[in-house]
Image (cartoon, rainbow over all chains, first blue to last red; front, side, top):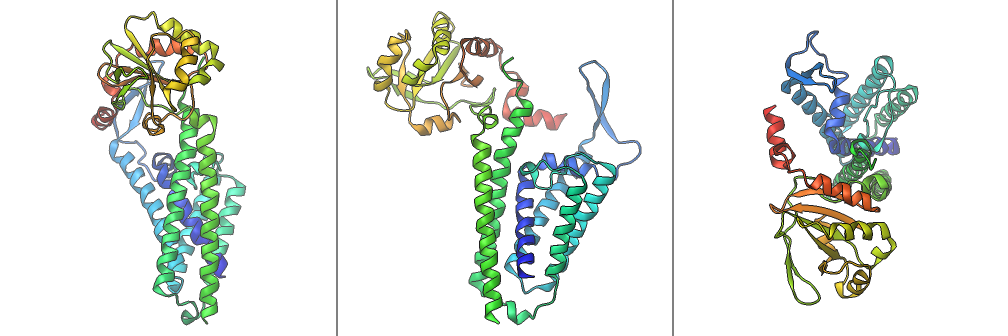
Length: 199
Length: 192
């Protein structure tokens, strides 16, 4: 039970840190699930190379996607770090379970409507897409979060301030490392996508 | 009772360390791959670092070129392994609008004789500390960065062939547009 709790918490922190390194990419995934009006509000058009005009998403919608993406990433880090450093707070287990339930829902919806699209669950660290395997992974993480909700006597898992600070620092280090690693991997991929090459 | 808490702390600590090691490994792989190397150097329009360095003869050279363009070549005596790049540099020596300098990572005195033998006479060979390479975001050699008289990067790339230098020279001849200057780029994007 404790191992499940720790694994899910570290996963959340790493996923949140990696997402923060590529907010624009994750915002594109968020855009797949945010409701949009039937006729999107546009603030202009952008020209394709063939001269035809394509609608451009207005700034408010883009900011909303970005805000939601940042909110999710920061929320994951906060929930993971809190769960790791405050194991006594049983309500946090329910919050983490709810977050993992959200992942399962998103994976299922992605599998149903956006199969094959990149989920960006771990930012640039992963190229996983919405598919059955992804749904299975989300379900396994949610199962782990479910196991972690098993009641434990609060006195049994009472940590001292030093332990809590050390675990919080560890969680933040993991988030920072995930951010750096995702930024490094993303830079390479960006180069691959953006560089025209010597032709 | 305390045992449960200790077990949790130990498990969490092991997981954190394992995650850190894995992420560091992933990051290292990401930075050392050829795709990441393609992003080395400075972006076009970015301000290049300013410096004044003395060559082995004591003559001082500055990052602000006296002519329209300056080609900074990050190389050393190992340039002899790139005959095509040497040929490309020799071809650019005739360019009146271009000033070429070679920045070596180690002492220039070691590289200068070899570079002279390669036919790069008249090209200042300057000692640059590894930190200066870092400021130019250069990790591998030979690397070429074209800078204009305003100190802005015109073109930047790892080079292995003469035609790459020639192509970079063509790109460097194109003035930096307002949308290519990093600060203005963001402002222009916001303004739509």
